[in-house]
Length: 416
Image (cartoon, rainbow, N blue to C red; front, side):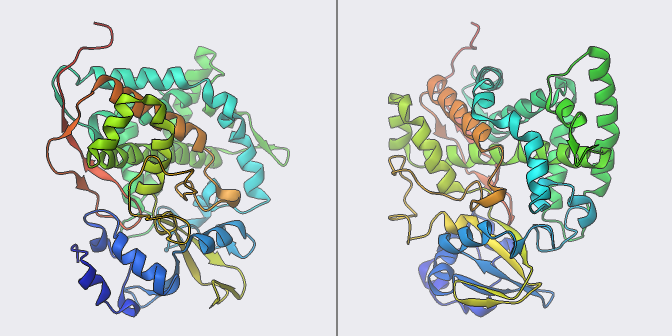
């Protein structure tokens, strides 16, 4: 199932193909399979091993249409995963922005909006640069590194911990929490993150007490503690679920895009060299990395009424999975979509969702981090080379690496 030759893909009976089977994703996203489904059945009933199923939506236009129609395709009704209680009970997860519909979603989104305005994000560049410098300094003299564990992982995790006011000594615990949360999204059993949320709530109580003793008012956590919705303060459960979203989404997606993006560049050394020679290409390269790697494959919605999408009837209560990875390689929008090209003109990718109310709140911070990450790697490690095989997480929900070994000419620490 891991070999995606044209003959094998062309010979499949699509009526029997389960796109969520992780075996299709052992070596990264199954782009050849997604392309065939997108051409022949862009809105398609996908069978599941338990006898159920859902609709898979693969075309860019259909993903955009469903993303913008929250009244018909709801996040609140059945959650954003195929199982409504995938990570934790739906009643608990409905306190998270991802699971809300307007007007509730709008009220809660506004709480965090101020922390991620363009002006606020620009003020964070020094913080991101500091984390990048510290990470590179730790391995630059060795001439070799694993870019996942030694760079892609610690930089965004350190940044989000800085924003939340979490001390460095607690970062290993937070790394463990984010990994447990990611694992819960693909676990066979539901509600595997419920215990994790309890641990985080206990931690937050202690962290808030520390901040109060120190007189700190400059973190996102304090913003949450002082927020109100409908004239009442948001409660502890709402805060801990906000906290879980920020620690997971603020770290995991940026980590995975940094790693998969560097792998794409290392496999296209001519374009990597162009960036080394001309750092002005970094912003365009980041947009192509976002399109090409698309690290969140899909989120689900639930139809609130009988409707249709792409000319296909969909019944009230049906699950609908919006495949962003496919939409970002739609031939109807992108010329030669499987080609990695940092000179592509303004790619209208779906890496931050298909638009609408759930467009990623932290997209500005993610872009900033990805740009600084790439600028610093190409400035300080000017002859990066692959030193072995990259290894993937076997997941139908996320495109992620567990390791990315590289070598380079040893350098010096920034302060030396």
